[in-house]
Image 1: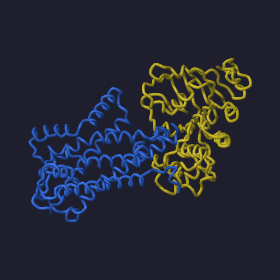
Image 2 (image 1 turned 180 degrees about the vertical axis):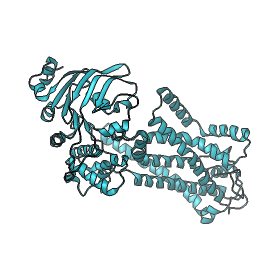
Image 3 (image 1 turned 135 degrees about the vertical axis):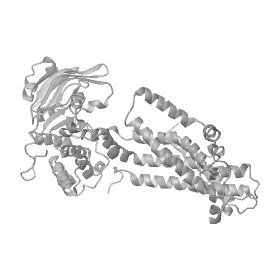
Image 4 (image 1 turned 60 degrees about the horizontal axis):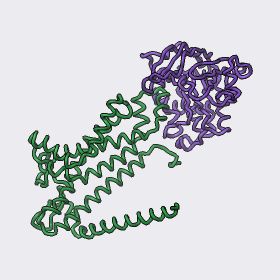
Length: 279
Length: 264
């Protein structure tokens, strides 16, 4: 086939994808929109009336994902720096990479089960925000390492050599050349990891539970938006549960979109000077 | 450390001689330099020529110990820059690399502005005063004959410069930290003839203040800019002498074969 044929096929394919995605999204927004109001974002959920909201779920999503990221980003970045910049022995690297890929491809529901065994059965924690944060951190960790490894290995080695040849130590080379050069890729990659974490549900059902409490606390149950969505569609008997689920979906989608947008903007702003940005 | 007076011109950098004694280098069990001994007088330009894979680049990388980055490197023998011992486990690499600067085959400016590229090494050395930085950056850019082309554009990204300008920027960056020796690893192989000519002029201008070792595949370039020429083959130093002699009356037949293009 000729190039033009392939080109047309690609155009048709992408149009089709856009239309299907648009229809799905339109349906969701159509169903959910009547439910969405500022009060919906604020109120606690209700099984009895259609006036429930997703206030605690929104808070839990933000706090739990935030806490899990705050734990995993420094650790994951440190592991990646050790892996790429301070290249340990080849045997160790092989084991490290194997473990990383295994953890990366582990179904999150299995991770949920593991965390349930350690934290809830073993350490006798309640189904709680704290247990959920640990579960999210375990899910997020290999992604953070992966994103960081990719960002660091994207920095040309010639930058490192130039810096070392000028009398910089390895540490200063990392601090002044490698990290600033890797930062945009790091930020946009981490944004994707965070966005993905916001939609995580399987790992939280066993660990953070499907309830919220009147008072927020680390040991209070911590249902997130994604779990709430799942709950509404499967268990809830509330009137308009489907519409509420759609509205919750829209809120989650907006949140994810916001995270992605902001991190992309930040990544662009952090970009070191390159040829595209002529002043 | 910095000897400069006389209207801003740097004088008497005390360019050191370089002494290599029975140097052998292996990557794992592959010996790439074999029993090399030579002396480069201070302030002169030595051109290193030879077929690909003859150990030229490794020689340069030993002189600033960038060779340490490869895994499984063995070094035997001695190297002295002036009276600074280069080989050994307890060599202060930061001090060595401030003495021995390097320019690479492909221009490799950092993704920073022109100014920040040149100031990089100075800031590493703890120069913080912005006036002093500006003076030193300007002086280095002048020395690399790039100043006239970039003045007023110091805040532009280094990548907005042409390839030849980028290479001169890298030279300015190396000169900024006041090295005594400059290692140049095929610095013009990625450049057009005009940019190449500018860099050759620059090397001629640096002669005397710095000891320069220039690895090149361009024989005319070696003939044009160097005082001495060393011919390497298969990790051995075949011949070293004044450039004129090496090019007109080589003592070794292998050198003659290489110079006349008869080397396979």
